[in-house]
Image (cartoon, rainbow, N blue to C red; front, side, top):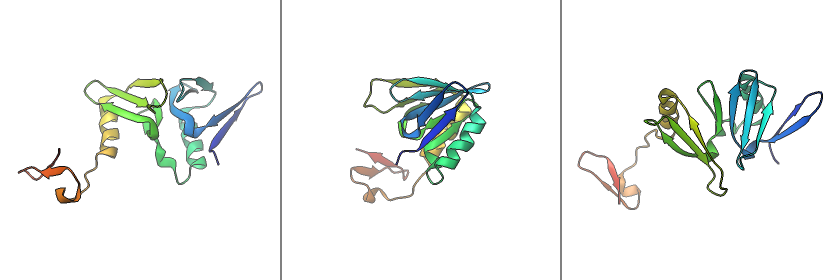
Length: 141
């Protein structure tokens, strides 16, 4: 079953299928939604309120959406590249031609990168094609 958020105003109804959302972007009391195919929608809700709605719908899977600073919530399934030096975050599913490049602070990118690079202690012998360096780090071949 799809995880869907419904937003209703006096004049329109908007269905948001969360699996297809690439990211949400704050714009005062509005939120811009960008889908994996590049289509956008604007919602009359704040990013803080939206974050609570997502947590309610995706109780056990809330971690697929990650808050990045004050401006963005990204779907980590589309995370392609984090470039701290250039302050750039690239989102793509590699199946569609649409790619999103977001300008994000270095601090926020460092925190995001740390989520994905937490060291896992394994010996190099456990990983095929990886040889240990003299300093104890593993090198992929």
